[in-house]
Length: 383
Image (cartoon, rainbow, N blue to C red; front, side, top):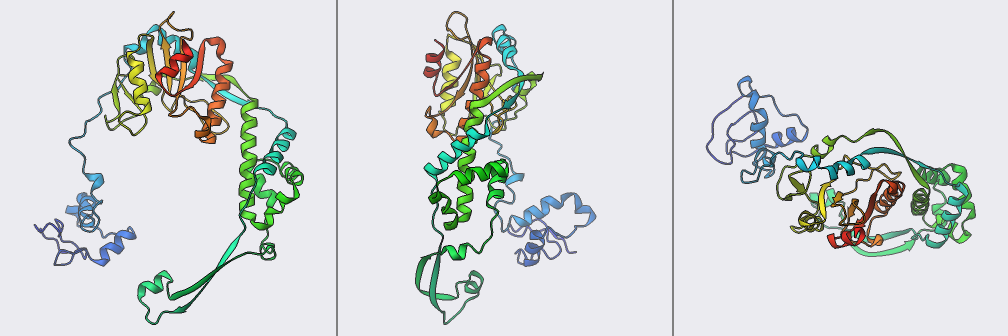
C-alpha cells in the first residue's frame, strides 16, 4: 500500500491502494468497489480515519459526498423547549384532564347496506380505458454506437400505428377477479361476488376491456363507500391509560427557522407547519398569542392521537379561553388552509370525521372541536 501526502486539491489527502492515479484522478477500481460496498481496508494507523478518507476520495467526483460531514455554523441551534409555567395553569390543567384519555373505536354496520351503496357507486362512476398497443416500423441504423445498443435505439423509426387490444387477446390472461377485490377491500369473497352480480352488465363488461384498471377502480370505489359507512357507524370507548405530559417535549427540532417565541403557549417556542414565512399556522398562532380571550394554548404533538380505521389522527391545537369571555372555554382545533372538504384528501376527511364523532361523545365534558382556517373563524365558533 502506497500512502503519501498530496497538497493538490483534487488528489485527496492520502494516496492509497489503487484508489487514485498519480495525476490525482479516481480510478475505476475505486468507483466499482464503492458501488459494491467493497472498499479496501486501510493500514492500522489509518483505520480510525477510514470513513473520512474514503469520503474525501469520493468527493472528487461526487459533490454531495461531504454534505453530511459539514454543518452550517451560522445556523441557529435550538434552545431547550421544555414545559413552562403555562402548563401548570388551572385553565390548561382543566382542559388537559378532559382530553388526555386514550380511546378505542368500534364499528358496526350492515353488510347489505354496504353492498347497495357500492353497487350504486360503481354504476354511477366506473369508467375504464381501453387497452391499446403501438406498432412502430423502422429500419436498422447504418452505424450503431454503444449507447444505441444499451438504450435499445437501434432502429430509425419511420412510422407508428396505435390499435385497440381485442377482448380475445385479453381473455387469455387469467385473473382471480373476486379474490383480488376481496383482498384489496378486506371484504369476504361472498360480499364481493354479490356486488359484482348486482352491477349493470355494461359496467361488468368493462372488465374485459381492461382487467387491471377494472380491479383497481372497483376496489377504490368500494373502499370509499366502506370508509363513509365506517364514519357513519363508528363509536368510541375510553380505555385504560392516559397521555403523559412528556409527549409535548419528545419532538426534536434542528432549526429555529419556523420557531415562534410565544407568551401563552405551554412551551416557550411553537414550531408551525407550512413552508411560507407567514404560513396559515404562523398567522394563526400569532393572533392566538395576543388574544385577550385566550388564557393558554398548546400545539398538540403527533404523539397525541385519536385512532381511526384509516390511521391515527392528531388534532392541531388545544386552547383554553378566559372564563366568561366565550361560550366554549375548551376548544380543540384543526387548522386547514381551506375549509372546503373537496380540497382535503379523502383519507384526511375521514380521519377528521371520526374525530368529530369522538368529540360529539365528549360534548358533555365542555370540550368543543372544530375545523378552522383562521383566528377569526375560531372566534366565530366560540363566541
